[in-house]
Length: 251
Image 1: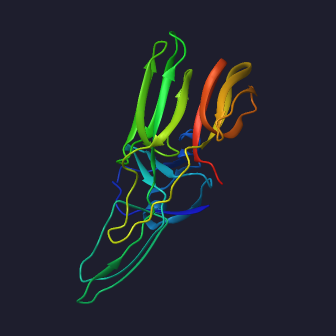
Image 2: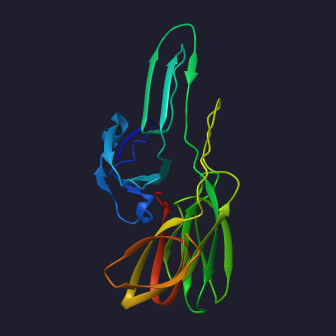
């Protein structure tokens, strides 16, 4: 899909930007060496269809980053005042200077679900990151056999960055993006996500899975050949591997 990205404020030392998406846990840059002038003027960028967020990282004298939610926002405004914001994403706006002010906006809410993360061995550290229901990016880790952590995160944002651990999808929880100030519509999302399973060392890794119908099975993934499927939960059974949650499965 095509996303319009524009920064309306950027410090003079911020430059040489890289653009990432959460479709691979912000692992590989979609674009690099994007100039400050280009982002200030705004431009269209192609991102994966399953991306819900983009991260803009400055690698110039000033090193900073910002995560932006990909949504659909349309606004029409007539006002005597001037409005500024730090960033816009897939957004179109027009303004005319008059004595009246009218604004209409529509936003799409992002649902939140509980996730249970657990370790499988006492010697590995399990690193993960996610975006919580308030839109804050969080990175943390677990270590020690049998330890668990329950989080409430926006769907499609939980990623295991390194180590060996398990990720299980639960039920919906409170929060979840921004809703319209006038009207809002929430769509019921089944508790079944698309997961990408990757073998990180050795010839193959075994994953224990529970599919969308509740059936339990074991999936073998060869090194260099990641597998993506729809499941309620995924557990590393044998070998080293990572699990990335790509968001709710398409019906």
